Amino acid sequence: GDSGGLRAAGAAPTAISPAKLWPDLRPASSPAWPYDEGSTETVKGITVPGDDIRGVDPVAVVRAEIASDPADYGAAGAYHETADRMKECSAGGGGARCPLLKPYYRDLTGDGRDELTLGFRLYPTNQTALRVYTVEKHRLVQVLDDNDAIIGVELAGRTVIVRSPAGISGYEYRTTWVWAPERKAMVFSRDEFLRTGKGRHTRTPAPSASASASASASTSASTSASASAGAR
Image (tube, rainbow, N blue to C red; front, side, top):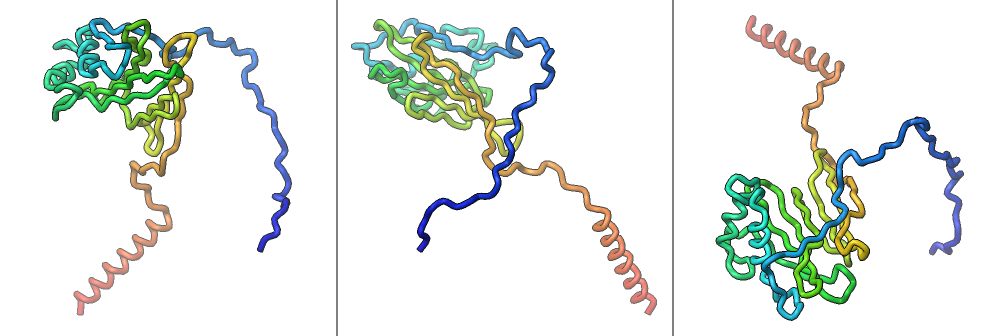
């Protein structure tokens, strides 16, 4: 039965401009740590039948990466167990111990052709490798290379969103990658630190002074009552 219309919401707060701290501070000339600004790499030894990326064997793609990087996947490498388990993958990635996850196909570059998004576990760590491939001049080209402890990966339009655990309970990181035509690669575009729920308490809170006093009084009364009963 409301007739609608505008209603006052009270006085608006006064706008306060940001205060610039340390105006004489010398600005940094380089980042504290490097972000991957987007890199590409042609996958050697892989053919693309008819330039159709769906005709590429995902298992062969991962095995090609393993063969090209003995430092990470060799016997002394951080991900040596992944190399061992890849030997048990059947065609397309099947197998109980196969670290390769289901491949996904979507146009992420806007050229009307699908790209290949691959994920595979990096054993014995808890990390997952995320890779995106496209076809350029009859060659398979890797346009996204990211290793992380991953909660989940989402494809939203032409955007790749990676969700990772944060060190604080109840929060997570979300990193967004988008296609950059000038670089011909997926580049980092946004990093968010988001609340996902209530954090868990890691320590039992100390009792208040009044609670301690009440508990002490209760204990003393109980002890006195027990002593009186024993005297009877």
